[in-house]
Structures are given as structure tokens and as C-alpha cells.
Amino acid sequence: MDHNKKYGNGRERTYGRKKENSDRKEGRNPNWKNKSARDTIIMDETIVDPDQDGELSKIEGRNAVLEAFRSGRTIDKLFVLDGCKDGPVQTIVREARKHDTIINFVDKERLGSMSETKKHQGVIAVAAAYEYASVEEILAKAKEAGEPPFIVILDSVEDPHNLGAVIRTANLAGAHGVIIPKRRAAGLTATVAKASAGAIHYTKVAKVTNITQTIKQLKEHGIWFVCADMEGELMYRQDLTGPIGLVVGSEGAGVSRLVKENCDLTASIPMKGDIDSLNASAAAAVLLYEIVRQRYYR
Image (cartoon, rainbow, N blue to C red; front, side, top):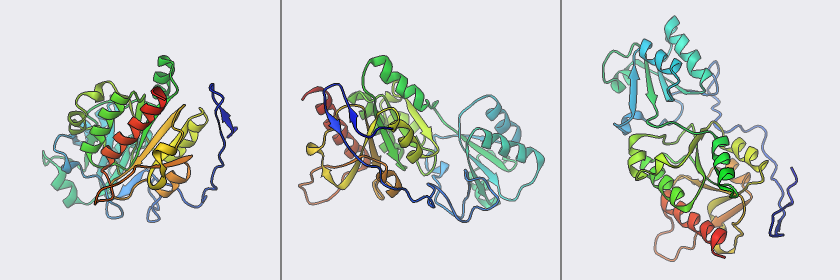
């Protein structure tokens, strides 16, 4: 890809990609040995707990879970009794891997505490309340509108209220879609839908395995990425026009290092008060509307 891109207004940007650390793979856990890289041993990392949101749709029991996969229903996460080698359970695990579902292996006590029916038979699936779009559908929406792509990427935003608020603002700002990661992030729950004030019905949300790889692929479509970062250049001094993706991280950790390194720009929001940060949805809103201002009102 030619990194010296010119757009219709004659504007030119030049940038250089930073060298990646090839030994680091986003989401890799050194304790995973015999399990797929998509699988999680619950003792090894923090998992977004389905019990934190009572409005998630749980599917319990071997036949019910298997039929949910085979019917094409979107399953966000699968919880499996660790060490279970029963044929039907292994069939479900294979089906989950085929659909790229996150698999969490948990102990009997943990699975029992999650179960509502107490008849889980070693498997509980957590289904999305709404269907996800693909990244290609987001790009197609921009093309249909005859507009340069405008995308929001959220890196590990776990609060469903923040996710819903970002979807709402993204819709009002004219963004063509929102991209979220499969791991360590809120999914499309009923709480997210409520916080979005209905915008979830109109805004395409894609869920991807690897944010860094998705950014690299979108760069091939000429999209530039700006990362929200407190140490970045003041947003008013940045050129945020043209095809653009805004990357916002979680309130605590911010954008991960590898994702930030693959962004082209970093932008900060001016802070004049006594505290030094905004929550993820508020920061996204401020930056989204600076992009709107530059896209339409310069």
C-alpha cells in the first residue's frame, strides 16, 4: 500500500508504519497449551461475566446449545465444564470453534452458579440480543451513501452503557458503523440496546477477533486511524477529514499499545478542570463531533 495518499482536495499525508513486535500476538495467553487460541481458561484471565447483565440470553443444555449453533444464531460466548470429554460436549466445542465463538472452560461450581435451570449438562451459551454486521457491510454502507468511510473502533470497552452510548452518538454523527473486539468487551445485549436509545437498529456493529489486523485491513481501503490518547496532539490541530476511523479505548486502560502503534494519529481532548479524564462514551462523543465539524463545516 502506498502510504503517501492524496485525496480529491489535493491534500497529502505522509506517515510511516511502526515496526511490530512479531513475538506479541494480541490476546495470546502463555498458559494456553492444548486449547485453541480462541479458548479461555477462566482462571487465567478476566472474563466479562454474563451474570453482570441479567438481560443476556442464556441457552443451557447440550441439545439446546447445539441447535442454537446449527440454526445460525449468534453466540457470543460458550461456557463449558473444564475437563469434560463427553462426545456431545466435544461436538458443541467443535461447532463453537467453527463459528469463531469465544470458549471459556470453567469449573463445576462456576457453571452451577451461572445456571438458571440447574440443568446445564456442562454447557451454557450466551447469545447476542442483536445480530452483528460484518466489516464489509460497514464499508458498503459508506459506499452506498457516497461518503468516505467513517468508522468507530472500541478497544476493550466492557461497560454496556458506554457501548450503547457510543452507538447512539456514532449514529447521530453519521458514522457508518462501530467495530468491537470479541474478547474483553461488551456485546450487543438488551442493556446496550436501551442505552443506544434505539440507534442499535440503524447502526451496524461488527465484532472482530483482532482489532490490530482489522485496522491493517481497513488501511488497504485508504482509511486513516486516529487514536484517542491523553498524550496525543490536541484534536483541533489534527486533520480529521477524509476516510477515517476513530479508535477509543476503555476508561481505565485506554487503547492497547499494539493497537495504538498501528494508528496513524493520536488526538487528545483539552482538559481544563480538576480531574483529568472523561469516560469512554463522553470522550468518543467529543472526538466524533470534532470529526463531524471538520468533515462538513470547515
